[in-house]
Length: 369
Image (cartoon, rainbow, N blue to C red):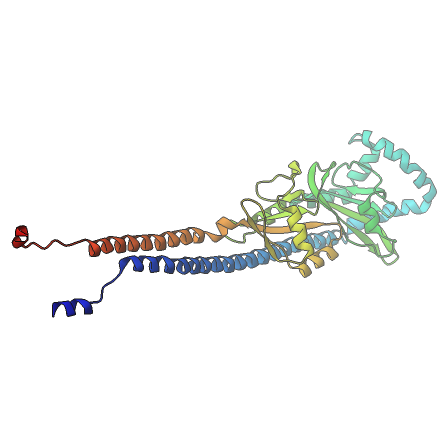
């Protein structure tokens, strides 16, 4: 009876159970790893889209800022005392244009040596138009210098002494004057202005009457406002914006100075991504970052408005900071699964040894045998 009962008992082979647990652990670990990686990829995609939207917003900020400055300068072209100064300069040209043209080189040579109280300089800097421009410039902190020329390019009003008297040989003047009929708005790239002694960009507009362009006004804009705009952009808890030239030099970015003329890391990858029309990409650096770029249509519209601004704007954050605790949770989860399996296998091995250990019956009659 006992033998029959023993045969009918279900016995667990703990060695086989250990092998099965180990085999089962492989798909569990792989599946868990795949799920976590898939979630991280989806999270990075979402982060990349957020960064690209932030880049769109940053570019819109810059466009709005430049458009506002264009509107302000357009208002200056309508100020009566400014138009009167231009009109007076053009009247002088009408008397004897050829003699005025011949006198320009001599005036250009004398200009750097002229003292502030010299009659030629006082006639330009102390007229009503220049006085108005100085008062106005004191209220617009980003306007570091304002100058006005007649239709020949001679200086007729300015907030201060400029580096040159004759402006018609400058790119900004030629483009703003155009063919002399309507002219156009000129927005130049960020450069160091020797007159204003600041890194700035040039904004020029024509003064137009019915007969055509009568003069040109130029404003030197301090780029500090653009620095502030870039510094205010956020695409996440650790993401920052950067404005760079297409050649890679930094215009504005946290931790960079325009004086350094440093090359922004990942410039080649940014250029490649821009050419392919990608909204975001992950860099190939040892500590990868995710870069968000403006929409190609938004960027093309910006280029059409400002053909001289070959700028790139990116919003970037490190992958590690973007993912936050996800990689750590993945490792913790994997360690937890491995730990549970190891403990289970050890328990199974211990139990298997207990099952197979020979049992010596405690029978006193055995001693007689």
